[in-house]
Image (cartoon, rainbow, N blue to C red; front, side):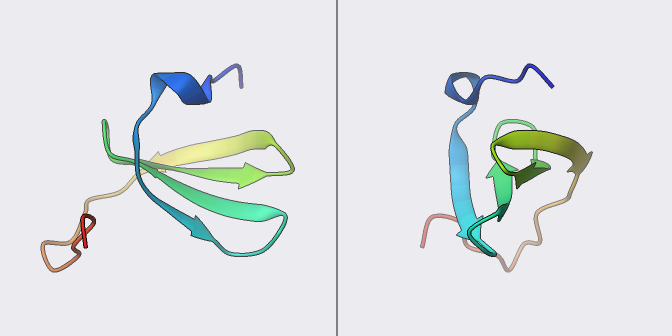
Length: 55
């Protein structure tokens, strides 16, 4: 995937491990599986109302 990180604004960045990252893109509510500096795949995800991303 030729995705550029600069074109997205991350609302949250969760470190699962040193090799696996879950990146939530606030712009289109897509979680990308980020493994070893490569976007493996992405999928849409509805943000739960009880989840406060700005806290």
